[in-house]
Image (cartoon, rainbow, N blue to C red; front, side, top):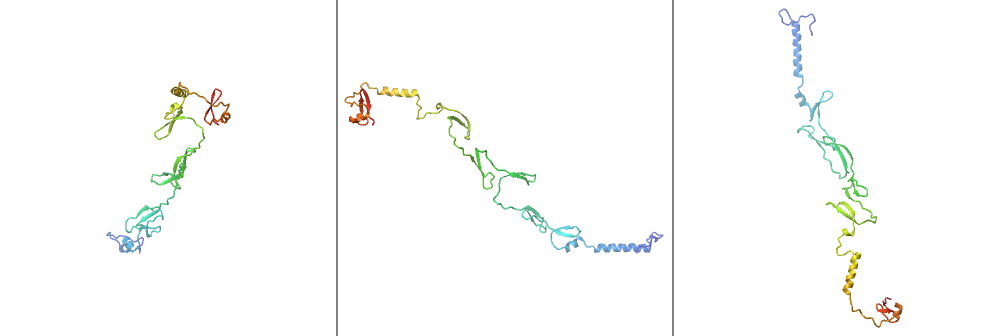
Length: 242
């Protein structure tokens, strides 16, 4: 019991009065008793059942927790820490074998932060592309088929080392090597004929005697002239063809 308010704490010799001494001593005894009866952390730990990361919940009660991951996204090894430090990793994804071309952007951590379609296309009438988005297989690129419009002119064409046409200009037969087929100009033809006549000239012209004289092939046939044989129509030599 607390001494009264007028009860002196010490006497004339500076010692505690009996009432205050008894009161203070009872407080000390109570404090010691409380300290010795309060369970230690080690005692509480020994009484807890289970494994995991020890935390205090919202109402101050110690509880065990363990780390978990989203199924199919995150895998956690040794989640409760009982066998070592927990480890967290990305789950392995199975390759579905499907997909399409995409343009992607990534943040500083390598995470995809944006995508958009990235289909390969070709210039109409020049380049054709099959399966441009790769959704059904590898894209293939080829030159587009050109319709033959007919017409055209003789052209000289220049190509680079890759076979690309780099220049054209009008061409004539002068630009073409003759090979074994010669180009017969009037001058060449006249010269060839003249040479043939000169080489075959014969001063002893054959004499045609006894030829059937007929006005035409029909009359020559009646006269017994065979097809391909010579007859005459007056002073003109004729060859029967029918």
